[in-house]
Image (cartoon, rainbow, N blue to C red; front, top):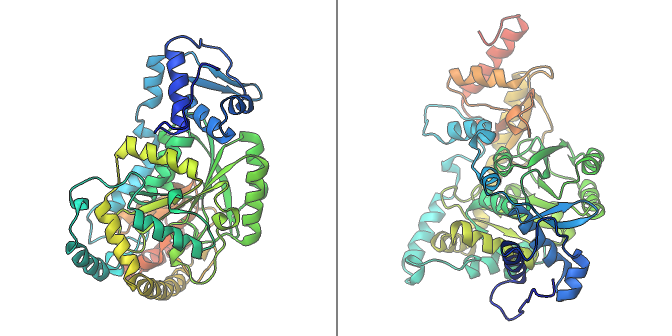
Length: 476
């Protein structure tokens, strides 16, 4: 690979230069199918770049179909097939149909339907007044942001503010390590596009975030579920799964977990990071609900300082789902690659929205809004738990904070049939099967504490329980 020239003064990142150079040599047949590339260590030493840069470049080339990896042997030029590549890159929506079912039902305008299975706070709980106030402030400021594209990585003052906020959580990073996104889902999508290729095994929470499962299935990933306990991931099971499947990435939601409502303990967090170090595993920590937690919290990113952890969050759950402002924080080299991918897939994010969130965060009202939100949610949660238990449901683990309550009627029951019966009565429940990687049967249901105020929900549950005890077929 001596003919590959890397220029440190080139405006393109080194990763892109390596990818472009090898692609050109393969396209020109200077590198033939089956040819073995130098080892990562040898390539890095020869070209005076970091091994991390080489790994990222080679992984991109594997994802693009130019290289293939053989475990224990290295990287080789792949035999490329244009028709095969088209099949791999096609959008297989059928892989995500169960996820799409829940999303379609949840996002339709249905004011007459009770939605205890929804995944967000009611609109009237959000900071509409603060948004209006910030809009008025923003409207008085002129500038090209009103008509132009924003910066590729996002609005710089917001990224600086986010870096300071992360610092208060014990996560040290600079604005250069932060990339803004259109919500947390966009951040997770960018990460999966960069690091996951068809056929890869990927660790996910079981149960976990169903929209993430949809993204990963579209990419052709093999989802491997890590059982979630009342203390976080089951680390013994996690190690066995790592040894069996050799994944590169673990996507996990650590605080006020969706759907169980549980937060990871410090002991389990340390064990997860030990496994990541031992098996060279990258962790994507989704912290979208962290602002709803009262008091201290254990974050993987705090313990790891973004060495192996990519940290993802958003303001969609606390400020406004409509604004779609989220972010990710990670190593600078990864942030550069994700910024490039963001440019290629969506150009930039909305600077207007990002400036609006910046105003909200700096005018002093966001903190007060959070305090009010947490207090209101704790009260609603207490009432919902009492009503669910009165209706004969078992609570997985009761917690003081957070949006979600994981509950079941009977360990032998498949909650999908209960959800189907509820839908006929205008009640949208979220059955546990939707939160499992392969939609396996589950007796559990996810309840939104803020969405359980309608008495019809508990009348339905009471009638269903009474029908089961009397021997009545509840689906009839």
